[in-house]
Length: 335
Image 1 (tube, rainbow, N blue to C red):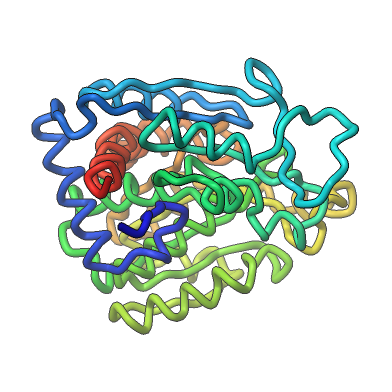
Image 2 (image 1 turned 180 degrees about the vertical axis):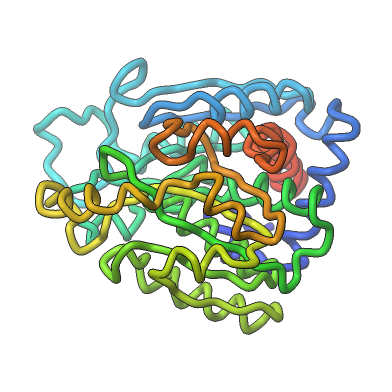
């Protein structure tokens, strides 16, 4: 049987995504299961985690499986990913061995590996998780690299719980200020899932420099066309928020300045007013607000917004557990 990975939702059809969301909703109603009974899962964290590690570990346990948590370079050997390299530096073993050995031990391999933030032309290749998928002989799950597909499912599930059918709902993906440049992963993923759900999506960002990678922009246009929604870019806060059913906030660095953050900093500093506040939310159609978390209060969104009844960030965070169980169950069932 062909190995099926969960690296990006773009590789999964709308029908398959809907099936995962239905299973996630079922797990939310009845958490316990046996889909991973007698099975094991390797969770490899190249970067810090709180919600992702907790929800994957607990999810594995609730489905009857066992999770092994590894931090390469800390409690496991540093890994080399380049092909043909002379390994005379800090790395101790090659991904060709790591992935194949882990595949002999476990039934699923889950990987969290952020970009290096030095050269987007390199980072956009997503080499780490693609190398795991290349060499592993078991399914590989993306726990966040340059996309965050598990967050997408949790987000979509929360939106469906509150809004029902998402088709043609106005969805605003807004950039917000942050004192540090951040990964574009959640923004990329929010664009993918909102357009795949057939929503009318507006990408709100301060200047054209903050538009996302063209690959994801093109996926957004394609998804919107295929699923009955729309997609546009706006730099006008009032126009974007007006009549919105959903506001989703995220900070990210401008790709033209990737690895040159001091040059980008003045632009970022000039747009602190993109913070999500009560005045902006008052422009919406009684809209929902959410964020993937962690969120710096009164930087990305005000206390009033985070504590408002329309904020569903906690619902979304809870849904990480249920959505990831659906993904693990689906992939483990193929073995």
